[in-house]
Length: 489
Ligand SMILES: [Zn+2]
Image (cartoon, rainbow, N blue to C red; front, side, top):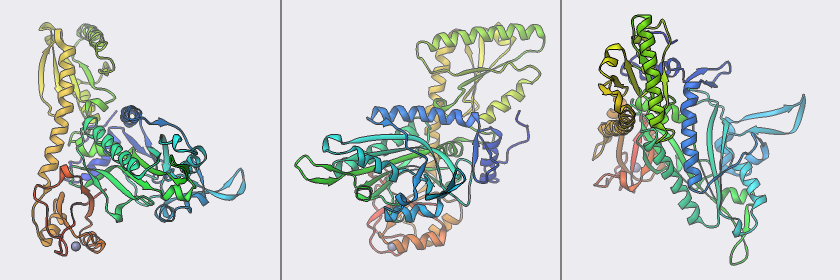
């Protein structure tokens, strides 16, 4: 049972608010191992729904699931120079097994490019074996120093897609396609709007040719890198001798892509939608979409109302058979807890829709529906309940995306600003600043040092400003691209 102490408000301390919501909505808890987390059923239920939706989307785009081992020979990591440089500092290494020192230490996978492409090399002989389109659902370990529940933990759950193609262009198309799948999922299911685009060299995945990213704005105006997709070029194919006989004869190296999203998305969902009362979950991802709270004073009333609730659930189920898998309903029939306390608890947990029903409602053949996102209350007839509930859930899903997108745009700054103004913004409320960039790593580094802001992406065309910036925000030289600057998680 959640205690009824008020949450810290977002305005007072966003970071404390986030931790309290995650803990008190029972999404996750701290583990006995520093930096690891326990995902509790409320949090795991959201992740399960995310997995299911993404898995369907991966399969609809031609991918199949497989599973590769947790342990990777240490030497594998060293075969791709940039890859080892990027990941070595945060690996966990197994040196002993069964009481004996191992001949070769094993890395606990931080990501699986090396082991997967070593296997692809065994399986691919000819161009006819390509493309190879695989995904795995797995846990990975990255030894992070500063951790936050869901956002950055030593061990986390994710999926990693890995593909091999005959040409650069096919790999490029795949990397872009999966970025689009991520965007569709984040906006369509999570109601979390994202900006897509390419990462600069300094933010690129270790070992990739190009990295693309989906970036979302959290309610503290910081960016969350929500998913990435990489065109790996032939770097890993060369390292692992992943070659194939080309259609015109001769051996060629394959072209690879990899792409991933993780349980970090649950943190993104909290920071996109939560309010000072707790979590708000988009209906499509909510483990419970509708909670029914019966209202009664006497035992006699209790019996009548609960009986009516059973009938209502029966009619909702019947309605649901016409649109299967839509309605996840829970009846909170716990006795000895006041309705107000139940409302508080389900609001904290983010259930999108609540039904209140008592003897007076029954007498009028109605119930009261309360939206979690807007708190709006409305009486509905019991005769049309199934449709009303479904319509309302669909509207909540849409409105949550619209609200989040409006908030992002209100906190986006476009048009010419000088560097002093930029520093003021980053010292103050922050936000996404669209500004010119000369392409120089020195400017990027200096800005990061001065303000902690980084280039989140060089945005795709649809996100770029109508008027392209002409000069670099920092040095004033001609801009080669528009960049989205923000502080990030
Ligand atoms: Zn510059």
